[in-house]
Image (tube, rainbow, N blue to C red; front, side):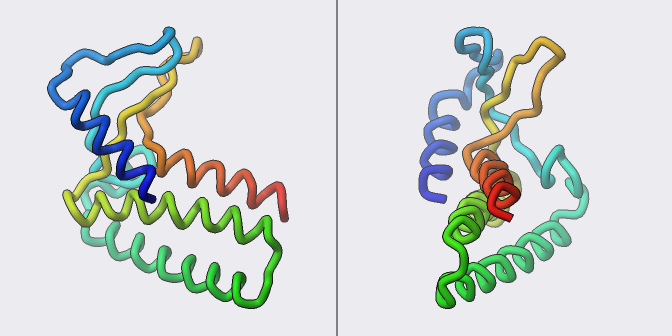
Length: 135
């Protein structure tokens, strides 16, 4: 969560007044995108419901993560849930603090442009990949 917030702060500081996308090696694009919704902008017009659902899922995730840790659950599961929880908390912090999530990086792939994302999204994605590997 801390790494995500630092990344977002730095991106906003460096890219906030940039109107064109900065491109790195033709692969990564950088620009500030304010995402009012969840993944792919879902629920953007229902911010209160989105905050409620997000907070409920985070509380349940942290409760299970705590239970899993205290009862010496599988290390792989604990690690994957930690990544997911950290990412979820990073995006939730943005959502509470400023009513949108800062996304700032995208992949430039041959088949088209990839949606913008942030470090929290990477943590969540990586956490789910680990979870499926360890299940």
